[in-house]
Amino acid sequence: MTVSAVLFDVDGTLVDSNYLHVDAWQRAFAELGSPADAWRIHRAIGQDSERLIRSVAGEHDDDWVARAADLHSRYYRELAPRLRAFDRAAVLLRAIDGRGIRVVLATSAPGDELELLLDAIGAPDALTATTNADDVEQAKPDPGILEVALDRAGVGPSDAVMVGDSVWDLTAAARAHIRSIGVLSGGVGPAELLDAGASILFDDPADLLAHLDDVL
Amino acid sequence: MTVSAVLFDVDGTLVDSNYLHVDAWQRAFAELGSPADAWRIHRAIGQDSERLIRSVAGEHDDDWVARAADLHSRYYRELAPRLRAFDRAAVLLRAIDGRGIRVVLATSAPGDELELLLDAIGAPDALTATTNADDVEQAKPDPGILEVALDRAGVGPSDAVMVGDSVWDLTAAARAHIRSIGVLSGGVGPAELLDAGASILFDDPADLLAHLDDVL
Image (cartoon, rainbow over the protein chains, first blue to last red):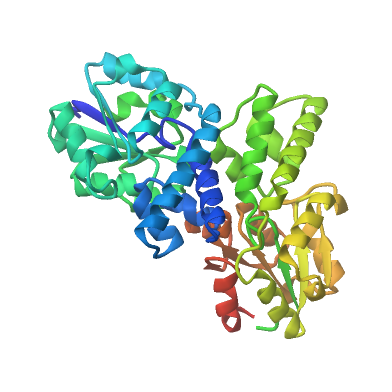
């Protein structure tokens, strides 16, 4: 395979943040009088905030949606000291960059969250570019954010591969005609990731690193 | 079908507690200098504490295991005000009891945690009996706790059905020769629950209640 760029999702893929997001969203919804089950929040993670809120908490006016997003942001920032990259995530990014393959982060998170995630990963030298929810009108599962990522990498979809942990990542990759690799580290089961279009699965970044020759 | 007793798991099945357990375990392991990924903890939930600790954090001496269990217990108690039964959980238990079918709770949680869970459910009148980790040497996936539950219900395995959200619940039911029903409310994917032996799946207690005539 000739791969010129690897596009990485970040939450649940490179950083162990999904469960902290579940916690922050659950507290936000409870505080607004609309308690939500943790599993439903977990399955909605990977989409942008507005879509997540509407899919979990139902229809509310724009003001309510904005307040939920603000509360999530506040609680998530409180949890930020616990953000931790998965084992060997930085080594993985540097190994790919070291092969002359461009590494682009493509996340549905807003820009301020991405800063926290980049600090947790600690491999800015390995990154060609980043994109986040602020770059597009609609984040995953719309393919837009991946198209921006391809554009920044300067490659076409057939020269890239996407790595993600959520159904939304893999659906977005399929819509953008990009081959995808699923990781279990976000807590979504293997059957769901394969159904969403993953070509192959690994446990986490360390497992992908150990099999890099098989997929690049 | 003639069903004389329904055995219910509690964490993730009747009460939205799995993600709070993930949080409490993750903090406990980090504090002991052995950080663990949230998704690995999530998948280990449903077993008793000692088995969960050894499967997630590897081999440690008995003192370390006891300290991890104590820290989890402390952090979980801090989160206890957030324990919430799933929608219609109490109605479900009363509907089953109202049909003259015995309702038995069978959990891998220790007795003090079960008290918190019973408070969250709020339907003590519907329960024939409870069993918990304190009643047996080994909790799920060993079938022992379900055998105690059957004994307390006064029925044989072919007259009972087990409801659970984790692979461990369904594996224990299969080993005890009890038909099982899986629920997605604990955050484990449907394919894994079917693989572990669930005869049918529902989203959560409300969904099971809506289809009670199909399974009892």
